Amino acid sequence: MKLRTFSKNDVAGKKVLVRADFNVPLTGDGNVADDTRINAHVPLIKELSDAGAKVALISHLGRPKGAPVAKYSLEPVAKELASVLGRDIGFASDCVGEAAQNAVSAIPAGGTVLLENLRFHPEEEKNDAAFAKVLAAPFEAFIMDAFSASHRAHASTKAVTDFLPSFAGPLLIREIEMLSAARDNPKKPFVLVLGGAKVSDKIGVIENMLDSVDAIIIGGGMAFTFLRSRGFEIGKSLCEEDRLEFSREMSHRAKDKGVSIFLPEDVIVASEISDSAETSVVAAGAIPAGKLGLDIGPETIESFKKALDGAKTVLWNGPMGVFETAPFAKGTKEIAEKLAEITAHGALTVVGGGDSAAAVAKFGCGNDVTHVSTGGGASLEFFEGKVLPGVAPYIIG
Image 1 (cartoon, helix red, strand yellow):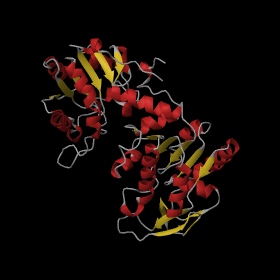
Image 2 (tube, one colour):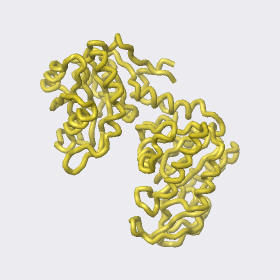
Image 3 (cartoon, helix red, strand yellow):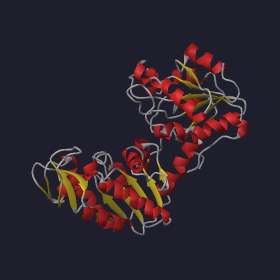
Image 4 (cartoon, helix red, strand yellow):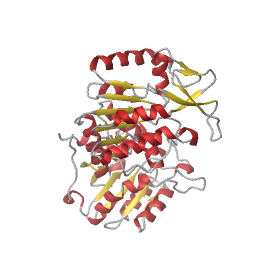
């Protein structure tokens, strides 16, 4: 899949509206706690500034439900962006109306302004055309660089493209190139690694990828639904009763297609999720009543790592356990390190966003895999085979 991008002539000296993703965590005192998403857009901002463009950045932050909420203001992001870039960044108290117009009019050539939270307006999430037209009015071009928001048909991701010459930004292009390499043209053997809490979150991915993968590794909370579907005792572990039949059916379909399914052989259990929890290792199919399965066990770690040996393409979405809590982090950590190892030997390794991205960052492997997606929900929908509404306007082949 190829996307339409911009040339210098498309942006030089022009007022350019850029959809970024600055939905970042904030500290209790209102500062940016993690600037990863801010840094992801820096190359585009610098490229546009070097071309003499007058850049206005737009984004959402949190869920203010269509009205201004002080704690969701993007002003702290503007301060952090100024620090990252080492120069002044303007800030407008609204993304439309007089405040926005005045701020855009004041942008010098090569300058940048950040407009206030899009979701302070209910029309944003409704993909309202009239709102998009007003948003676009001061500008001469639009660049979509927020892959993580591309699965939403909102005014700033979809409707705005009807009013401006529109292009895909470098972050969006990189995401689509990397995810397409895994989804559409995987080198074999291709291993799909799935974790996280729910089978229901991964149904679309499993169904869309079953014909192209050679093996599926299943860990995390979702593994217990699969184990329960096979008649195993799972104690108080997570289980989606309404997905038991799907789990059985999927296992049969995989077997018919020659796709190997790897489930936990042993698990780490405890009575509670805490740093001081008393843990033990038990067989995956014989979890005591009252106990929770919270991570894959040592035998499973070795089994999963062996299944990854020799893989040429790996897609990983979802942690192997409650990795945020120390006693249950080992499984996710070792899988992250295994992906780093096989990447060094030439494998294409793609990590979905959300918790998976947080995990590889936590364990220092983010730079050692091929690609870490910036979008959890967007990457899931992409691997379900969907055409993302924030990507569709730029597809050229």
